[in-house]
Every structure is written in C-alpha cells, then in structure tokens.
Picture 1: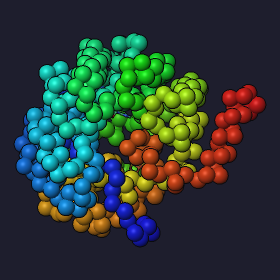
Picture 2 (picture 1 turned 45 degrees about the vertical axis):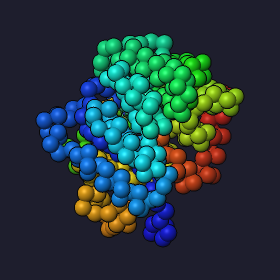
Picture 3 (picture 1 turned 120 degrees about the vertical axis):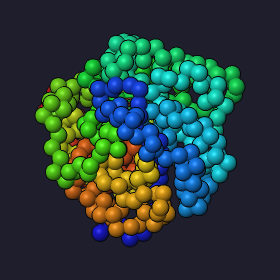
Picture 4 (picture 1 turned 60 degrees about the vertical axis):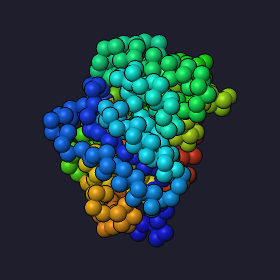
Length: 364
Ligand SMILES: C[S@@+](CC[C@H](N)C(=O)[O-])C[C@H]1O[C@@H](n2cnc3c(N)ncnc32)[C@H](O)[C@@H]1O
Ligand code: SF4
Ligand code: SF4
C-alpha cells in the first residue's frame, strides 16, 4: 500500500514542447515532427490556467521547471514566467542554449531564477558537438554561459546559472575540467546525469506505456556501462573529493555513491532502490497530460481535471503501485533520485561500499 498520507508533489515540470532543434545521440525528442504537434500544444492561456489551478492547490512559493524538448522554442516562455511570478510561483528552466543568443538580456531580466544549461564537455568541443548532434553547439553553449554570467553579474540579478552534464563514455575525462570551469567562472553549480536509455527521452506525442515491469536494458547500453565503469568510478571518487572541498556539485553524496554502485553492477541498484517518483513528481506534457513517471501512461489531463484530483485518482495510485516493480534505471536521474534515498536498503548500501573500497584498494 502507498503511504496513506500523501504529501504534495515537490518536482513539478512543465514540458512545454516536444520540439527540439538539436539531434542529441542520447535523446529521441528531436524526432518529433513539428507538423504533428504544433496544433496540439497547449496555448498560452491554457498554461496560464494551469498555473492558476496549481497555485490554488499548492499555494505561494512552489518551484516548477520548464523543460521539453527545447523550452525556448516556445515564444511565450517569458509571458508564462511573468504570469507565474505574479502568482508568487518560482520559475526554473532547462535549455540547450543553441538558439538563445538574442535572448540573453531578456532571460536575465525575466523572473526565471534558475537556468540549467546542458553542456557535455569543456576542453574538447567535438565531444559536446557530437553528443548533441549539431556542429557549432559547443561554441554557442559556452558563449551563452559566459555572456549570461557576465550580464547577471553586471545587472546584479539573482539568476542562478547551472550546468547539466550527462556522463558518457566519451566525456569521462571532461567531468573534472567541467567542475573546474564552473568554479573558475563563478557559475552556480553543476549536476551530473547518469546516461539513461534514450528511449526514456521520447516525444510524449508518440509515447505508449513502456513495459517498465519487464524492461531489459539493451545489450548495447549494458556494454557501454561495462566499458566505462572503471574510469567512471575513479572520476566519481574525484568528484566526491572536489565536492568535499567546496566545489559546487549539486548531486548529493548519496547519489554519487549510488552511481558508483550502478557502474559496479547496474542490477544492484534495481534490487535495492524503490523509485519514489509516484510520491514526488508531477510532470505536465505539451498537451496537458500529467505523468508521475515519464515512462508510464498519463494519469489524467490537467485541462479538464483539477491537479489535486489527478494526484489522488485511481490511475495515479496504479502508477505508484507499478513503480514498486519497475525494472528501469532512471530512478538514478537527478529529477528522480533526490527524494528516494530514504528508500535505499542501507545494509546493502554499506555492503556495496565495502566491496568498492576493497576493489579500489586492490584487496577484492
Ligand atoms: C531532455 S532535455 C530537455 C531540455 C533541453 N532540451 C536540454 O537539452 O537541456 C533535459 C536534460 O536531459 C538530458 N538528457 C538527454 N538525454 C539523456 C539521457 N539519455 N540520459 C540522461 N540525461 C539525458 C539533457 O542533456 C538535458 O540536460
Ligand atoms: S536532450 Fe534536449 S537538446 Fe537534446 S534532443 Fe533532447 S530535448 Fe533536444
Ligand atoms: S525508475 Fe522510476 S522514473 Fe524510471 S521508469 Fe521506473 S518508476 Fe518510472
């Protein structure tokens, strides 16, 4: 049984479009055809209505994050941010920073308080460009980070600028330099994402319910993790040391340790962490469908059902039950992990830690 007293969600996402101008090798969202979705996306007024409904339910001061697809492809993102601000709702956004050169001033002057910019390498532009599938994206992203930081400082704005980096086989030697870059340039912080199955990052317009209970990691992905595991564990250890001396790495120590366990044996994570998204996440897709888990069926459409009713309806309860037998690994992603460390089997965690320590010291 799900805990009787259900708290309100803490991780609210507005995936305002499935559309994207990149072609990231890790993601399938860019395959969404604009022609398939443009007349189906919620209008500005519909998103405003949603903000009002959420505010009626959650009150002042809650955060939500614009994501997608690429959220800055929606021209009304600033209007929506202003409207949210007028309701005392706090706004964050993700971006690939590819097409925002003309928007720097507007972003800094807007009520967006936290901007998470995706960057997969700092020393080798090719690694970033190849992972994002578009030449020239490194240059644009670095320029966006530097210009936004400069403007933010000049205008004494409170905009938080953060970097989001996927841990790939190709960029493991870039992770430490990325942290150094963040510290040197007074960027607020960096968060590392475990590479997930790209099928989890799909256009919602095409999605059917993934068979989360019988999911099997594709062989190719499992091999990728195996090949990068030794170096990944070394690098994560160094990240932990850097965090300890004050570098601004947002991942918790617990998450970094869990990533090490994952690289040692992904299935150890599966057997020992129950995913908690059903009690924490509330993600609204471009068409108004709400999901607690991005790989499961929607639990209701917020255009015609109040969010507080969706949160406790039968479909949400069914989804919460399904999370208990889920065989997917995305519970380690930032948007899913931070709330569920309490669900980690602590004895098992200690055993894995001891095993890793023995392995690293050559006594395994
Ligand atoms: C789906 S994107 C949406 C926002 C925006 N388009 C961007 O790229 O920042 C959100 C985040 O997911 C990351 N991401 C994409 N594919 C991923 C994967 N297979 N595993 C983990 N993170 C992934 C992106 O790098 C980005 O930081
Ligand atoms: S990760 Fe972001 S930028 Fe890349 S294809 Fe997906 S939505 Fe687009
Ligand atoms: S691990 Fe969590 S977020 Fe991922 S599919 Fe399973 S229940 Fe959903």
